[in-house]
Image 1: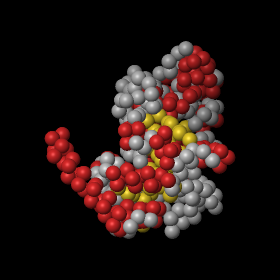
Image 2 (image 1 turned 90 degrees about the vertical axis):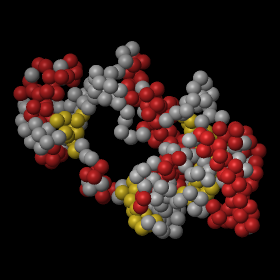
Image 3 (image 1 turned 45 degrees about the vertical axis):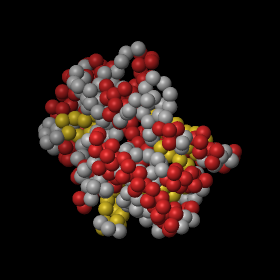
Image 4 (image 1 turned 90 degrees about the horizontal axis):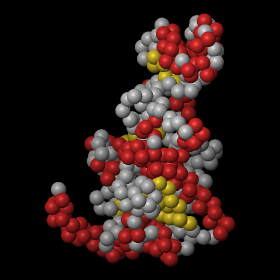
Length: 408
């Protein structure tokens, strides 16, 4: 049984690709929406990124991570039958979700102005790199570029070091979350107005919003915050500290931390007497703390600090994360049964709708795996009509092949 939840009954036409859009549409699917992933015959480009599950290039790690609870169909939007099928689906759907470069949906004849003529209740959500207008609107963008432009990369890394990208795709992921939220807002509004809505999110705005406190710091002080390093610049007891065998994460807890690490003398030291003194003597403060922490291993410190109710934790690699007792208790890692490849694992949606989700998660599908069933169930297409659609797509692909060879 497919997932049933608060969004059951909502049909989403997912024309997104890469990371930001698929992440957002997966959230909607996790909440019960029927998500129909529409791909070109070549499939979403992320399917080509190794490693692949069971050595199948159609099931890359990206596709597996972002394709849960979706049905996959192929429509060639540059064919008459492909565009007709899209328009037919728009008539019976609630949301069209894309993350193409600005102007792409207009060129496809699938922008909001075109779609609302077909279905006045349709909600159209677009994620772009920079926005639908402006000096960068037509430029290509990726997560790392957005991190650089937004200021995120300039705040990562150690002071004096090179700019550093976040290990997580924070621009893509935050844009996906905001887009999913915007869609839910538009669905709620439609319940009262009966009208659809255009929703836009871009990677720059989304990433900058994650830095609101840093921008406010700059607006007030006029000083540009430096790279933040591994230890908080104005809370010197917050960060990642070196131990005998690695590092440990510790949160603000002064002066209890000093007592826990047997350095009560630091409490009376005028260099560290209060937060301002600690900031002024940041380097010396950290050196003294780490000198004490290097007397024992990280695991021992975490056990001791937690016993003292001092916020702390290990710096886990991914193999350790999935074995963490809290992660296991939270059921953050889920298993799904793939019809061809057996049990596959994934990271669950973090939104817990208590007693509001039923059914089993479905793993990522193959390119076009559900084309026939979706067109039959949603549109009542006959076998003959589906065969004509596929034939036209194949003919178009043959026409394009010589041109593709010239480009490679």
